[in-house]
Amino acid sequence: MTVLDGMCTVCMVQQPTDKGPHSHMANYCTYIDFHKFLSWKKNIRYRSDLHGPICACCHVPQIDDSLHKRISPGTPAIAECPYPDRTLPLVFAIYHDETTREAAQSYFKKHWPTDIQYALWLCAPPECANKTNTMRIILWFVETHWLQ
Image (cartoon, rainbow, N blue to C red; front, side):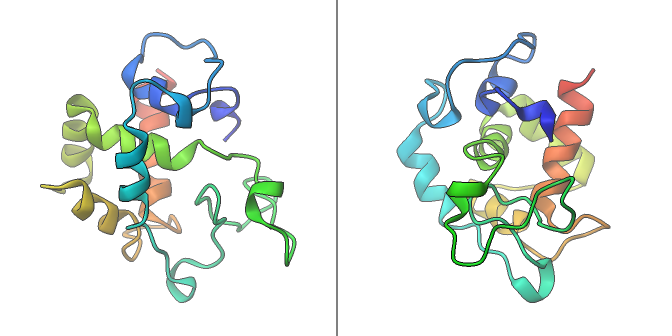
């Protein structure tokens, strides 16, 4: 996930030809309606029995220290999370950009008429080896749109 270091993940979607670091965090990006994002984000809820431990800050599964170290018990996730303000803005931007949304729907063979239905799919039971559909779409975007 180091590919996300120093990046505004919304700009990764909105400015795909600009591979340089962006000095702002996604929460301050002019391409995102932050209040709409916060409202949408409330729909993302994982089940520990289905998904295992998930970082409450970045939504990355805590399955291996090389991916995401486990948050210390009793510590707020934001205090130890290596990817704050990265992953959910990215998946939000993927949906709200017509080109990436259509590519994602084609690749995953899904149709999400609303961003709420997309959010529900992100935290639905995973459809493959990934722990969450959120990670599936992040990995898909990085591999097919960013690392090209």
